[in-house]
Length: 143
Image (cartoon, rainbow, N blue to C red; front, side):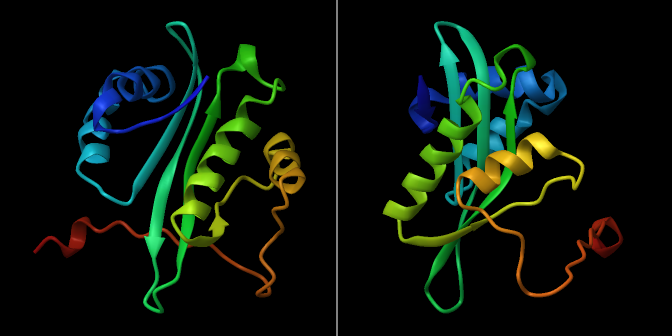
């Protein structure tokens, strides 16, 4: 069963964070609850967490909006059963109903399973020419 996380069911998100990120990331749940743009879905059967997907619904300066998928994980024992597809579809449907017209994510070039899933759901590689991801550490700016 796929459940959208809200303030009413943060314990399910806590279980997913613990399963996929470890106990050290528990503060992630509080950050989720305090961030209005955050979206999260958890796939579970009874008490077992099978997978999760989370990201943000981002409003753009032109008043349009889009989704950003930060993470999609499915437990090894439950892969290739449609759980990742169901999680992404739940996120996409929720975003579309909220007015988002596009969704983006990044993945490792060698992650063929993920790339096959994304392509099967209609995703395409960026068409704005060659792209490069940059990451910035912001700690030096805490002056």
